[in-house]
Length: 247
Image 1 (cartoon, helix red, strand yellow):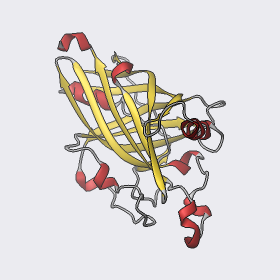
Image 2 (image 1 turned 90 degrees about the horizontal axis):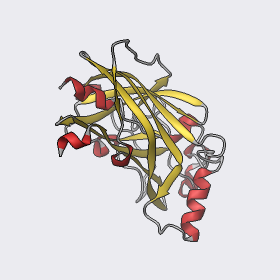
Image 3 (image 1 turned 120 degrees about the vertical axis):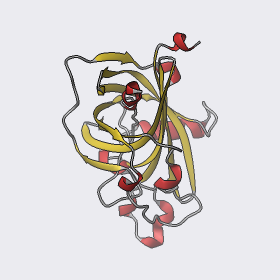
Image 4 (image 1 turned 180 degrees about the vertical axis):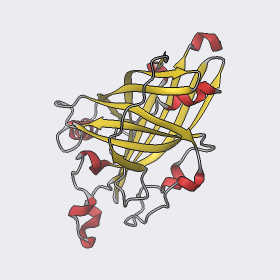
C-alpha cells in the first residue's frame, strides 16, 4: 500500500493553468515549493503508452475537449512511500478529440492553442510537474464551489468533476510558459500486482500561467458570450510499474 502514494506523484496535469486564490471552483494554487527528495529512493518509470492528460475548454457558445501526451517521467519511492517524482508533458502532442483531425476547423483550433495566445508551443514545447507533497484525502480540505457566468456550456463545478473515492491530495510544481506554480488536487490511486494506477479530474485557472486570451476579466457582463471561461477542466489516467507482472 505504500506504493499507492507514489503514483500520485505522476499526476499532472497538467498542463493547463491552475486556480488563483479566490477562485474556489478550481484547485488550490500557490507559489512554487521545494521539491521532495530522498537519497534512498527507488525510481518507478511511467508507462507513457498507458498514460494521458485530458482537457475541456469552455465558452458560453460551446466547448472543446482533447488530450495531451506524457513524454516521460518517474516517481521516487522508499519504505516510507512516495518521496518525489517528476514527468514531462509534450504540449506539441495536443489533440482536439471532438473534431475530425485534418479538417480546417481542427487545424485552426489546435493551431490557435499552440500559438502565443495560449501555450506558445514554439517557445515552450513542454510542461513539467514535480511532486512536493502527498497526503491522505480529506473532504474537509476541499474548497467550496464558486459561481460561474451562467450559460449552457459553463464549466462543471469542482465537486461535480472530482473522481469518485479520492484517496490522496497531491501537490506539485507545474511549470508552463516559463512560470511555475504549485497545485494541489484530489486523486484516486490503486496498485495491483506491481502496477500503480492513478486517476484525477479537477478544474484549473488557465490565466495563472498567462493563457489569458479572451479571459473573463476582459469582458463586461453584456459581452460575456464572447469570452472564454478561465476555468479549464483537466483529467488524467496514469500508470507506472511492471505491466507484464500483472498479466
